[in-house]
Image 1 (cartoon, rainbow, N blue to C red):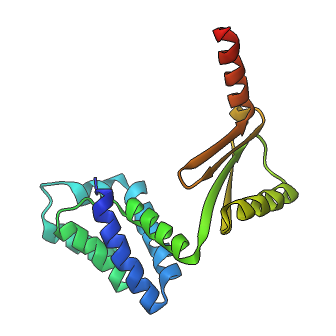
Image 2: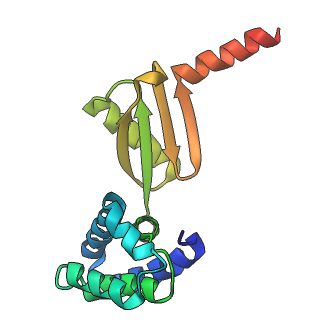
Length: 179
């Protein structure tokens, strides 16, 4: 597994270069695609991480698969990870790259899990309230989980605001048992 510290260095270098070249959005898409291919293709992932497959063979396969289909710098990062013996965990690298991009744009990603889909008015009101609370622009991602019963669970960075019916019922149950 590629350590977060190592992935951060590669992502930071790639992000800085992408900013200089004005290709942040393009490279983010390419990193997402690479992460998806490696994650969704177990045989390809196994080939890249197998200790008995030579570095030359790994580089040859990667070059044939991706050369001309992505920015040379993005491909070079994958090849460099392989050359240095790191697990090519492009999902982690992509995640850090996106975090750097959001930070540069002063955008806060927020995930909202609700028991039912939110309507446009609710999304607008929630986005406005969270923008006011954080002082930053918000990108809102919605998920539906009927197990919540009602309410919301809002994740802002590493903060979780749980206002779900499930949690309220669990707290009530705990309170009643302790009496």
